[in-house]
Structures are given as structure tokens and as C-alpha cells.
Image 1 (cartoon, rainbow, N blue to C red):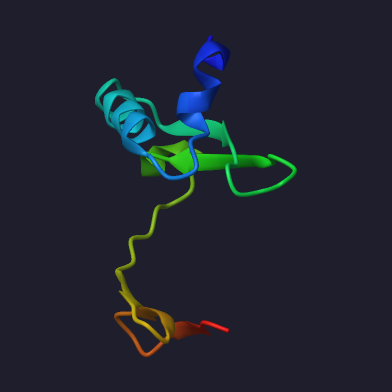
Image 2 (tube, helix red, strand yellow):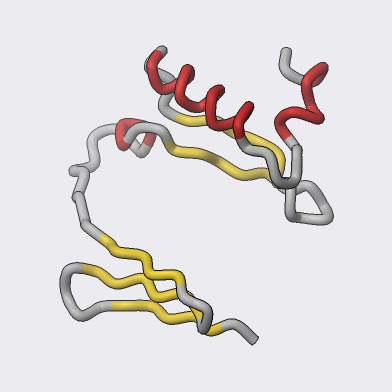
Length: 90
């Protein structure tokens, strides 16, 4: 039903429509949105998980806290522990 508004969902730098859609979907109890990748030249599929309940029922859900730092030199994902992932710009 959303194909008629494809240009709104696939805009390369204006996310206002999709963010509003996700907010409204979350308020209605939607757990997962499947959508087309904007950046992938093949337009592969992506998923936005709006609620942890979208994962396999019956599995215990575990919560973790991660911190994201974006700098001029790169990106660092840091967990509350010492675990981290670092990516530098090339």
C-alpha cells in the first residue's frame, strides 16, 4: 500500500517522512518495519526493529548499553565494559 509514496520512503537525505512513519508505527504497536535500502545500489532489504518483542518469542531478552562517538577521525562503539569497535575514515 505504500508503493505510491516510494520517493518519500527512499529520499537520500530527508528522513522526516520515514521518522514520522516509524514514530506512528511504534505508537500503534508495530514491532518491525521492512524497507528498501536507499544506499545499496541493488536496493536490498533492511529491517527497523521498533520493539525487542520483534525477536524470536521465548528467548530471554538481554539489554546492553553501548555508546557511539563520531569524530573527524572516525567512529567508536563502546560498551559499558571494555569491549569496543573502532572504525577510522579513510
